[in-house]
Length: 504
Image 1 (tube, rainbow, N blue to C red):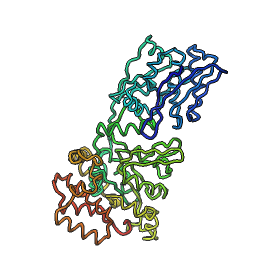
Image 2 (cartoon, rainbow, N blue to C red):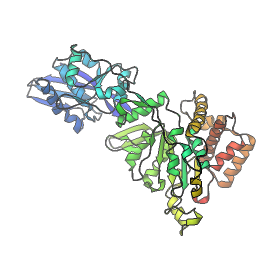
Image 3 (spheres, rainbow, N blue to C red):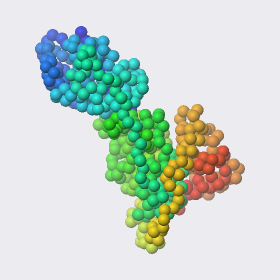
Image 4 (tube, rainbow, N blue to C red):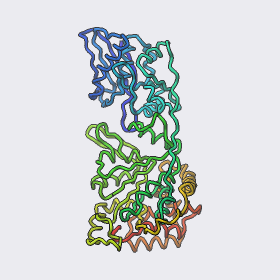
């Protein structure tokens, strides 16, 4: 007799169903696992044997074969322990075979039979719900899986508890959801002295999810401004929270199974590798751009990142997804993020400061910012210069709107966009609009079109830059509550796009 249980193999954020088949047949005693397992899966036989021994269950002196089907799909991770043990228990007629076949299980076994939490419980619950099966997982992983309404989730602390549940001795209660986390923000925009133009750019970028680069001398407040972006962004919607949490679940970043409504804010160091930023490594794991999905990716000291890393950002910025292609894996991750970059004007950082002028200007700035290629720079909707703040300004009282006030305006603008794009599947914010949709929502009035055409001709703007200016102008109009895009909106959008020659 062949007993069956089910588990999942992860391919990006997708969880593919895997059938775990167990056959106990006459022959020399052996315990083998086939079906393209990796080292962690192959070692499951020792963990399963020890866990069963701790329950006083001895394996028969027969040949035990575990097959993971489909056999051509790579199986990676320690979460195969529990489904292997479950199929073996069904084959030994310790648990009912029918119940085991209706279960999608994942979990790592320790040698004493306790269940160790694993990553990926949330996408596994989605797969179980789609296949109309129950999900069995470690108790510590059940809180995140319970967020899938359509799935029946059971969490257990030990393999013995699983056996008692399936035999009816001590049924387990369905898992309960983890808490919804809302991180409080203590960093307020009013803490930033001066830099009113930069604050305005932050508001526009947050309202339309526009990419932005800040260039200024060291200590001018670029990082300080970026750190306050989460405080002005609206919370994640239910669908956004679920899609973002599925990526974080695969990376083991969900805190006690809770789902956060706060938008991700990722700030990798400039020494990060391409695999860390884009994704890759063993199992083609998600990178920083995917972990920042529906949130912000802040890259400080932007020119200091590897040229290869910077150039790999060009396609994800446009498409909102990344294909991590390796010899044995092709995995697609969503990565619809807002890129915020910060850079000094030159290597020493003081090329634009008259009091501390760089002796190698303008060559120093051209060499330094030249590390950012033209096609990549063209993808920034907003480019602003952040001048140094005078010492006298530091003693002034806080000025400008608070983060709470700005966040209210941003939320109102986002709500307008939600209504605008509710029937458009591939657009959610103004930054996503393109083609006919962009023409319908962002065509400026005659005066606005005239100034835009003159600027495009005067500064040699690309077609991409032309469309990005229209998107920013539409966001500015939304912040104002205007129905149409007018000349002042286009003019302000152009002011954030046209920079000095050194920054172009």
